[in-house]
Amino acid sequence: MPTIAEKILSGMAGEIVECEVDYIMVNDVTGVPAFEVFEKLERGMKKEKVVVIQDHYVPNKDVASAEQANALRNYARRYGIENYYEIGKGGVCHQVMIEEGFAAPGRLIIGADSHTCSYGALGAFSTGVGSTEAAAAMATGRLWFKVPATQKFVINGDLKRYVMGKDIILHVIGDIGVSGSLYNSQEFYGTAINNLNLSDRITISNMTVEAGAKAGIIPPDEKVFDFLRGRVRGEYKAVYADTGSEYEEVFEYDASEIVPTVAKPFSPDNTVPASELDVPIDQAYLGSCTNGRIEDLRVAAEILRGKKVNTEARMIVVPASENVFKQAIEEGLIQIFLEADVFVCGPTCGACLGGHMGVLAKGEKCISTTNRNFIGRMGHKDSEVYLANPAVVAASAIKGRITDPAELGI
Image (cartoon, rainbow, N blue to C red; front, side, top):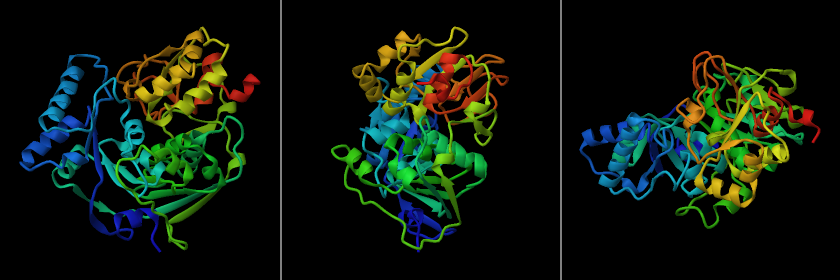
């Protein structure tokens, strides 16, 4: 019996299939080379399927990034791409794809960015591809896939306070390793998953690629349907695995045993409980496609309310989209951050990939809500990145060292 991935791709695990894709997303880093390849194909463009988003090196940090962004802007104009998101009108690409109704259950979406798997939180099969593959899909509307085998992850029980979707996925990656799902699709089930808000589900799907997964899918429910009501573009049909579907492996976890978790350098599977660390930090970073949504900002603001960032550290908050930024202003969250001596800026991927707006110097340590902590990921090769949820990041900013939020006694 087929899994969700097998149903959406219309094939069984291991088969090579060619499928019509619903959308193709590119950003300022991957979009320019995709358009360059597309032009060599000398074909018409399926422009209604193409989404172009400026997010990685914006606002531009130097002449090179300005030229890159300008080239992408000119391509979007030349080909009349309506789904173009300039700075000030969009945000981080994956958040925009979800907010703007491109992602929906049952859809097949590719993006020239590895964290395109985020849309699996809405029941889509979404995956990252190279710029060349994106170019081919722009021209044909189709792409070939090897249908992945599927692993099933079941998390039942109640999560403790300050435990979030980030902790679930870090717990899973810590268990199976960064190659534990190599070219597999992951499906998530259980009462703990059902009880999560959509933001936490997106965090889980976002980081499935850190275990080598092709996709990370959570079966859609009323929370997803409510979110999409009045937002989704076009029609969609939810897809579910059949009873008795054959899975490559099944993993089961007790949610009550998952604690606020930190991934130490230099791998997302190098995980330990936050309570077991006492590492001084130079920077705390809240943002990115992994944890820059309004729910994440609310958690951090509640912890920071009436407090100050430690004088030995600094904190940066970057909402994942203009919409999130506006909502955070309306809810008074930005004021809380400013009163706590936090630096806040508009949406950009900058610091997450060591581009700008938070680059680390030699020897500096950062506790971050981002998704990767490889050598040099956020700056100097001798800097260190520790991955954690928004509550841990906020608590650590207050203490000036990696801290379990429970230690604050609030």
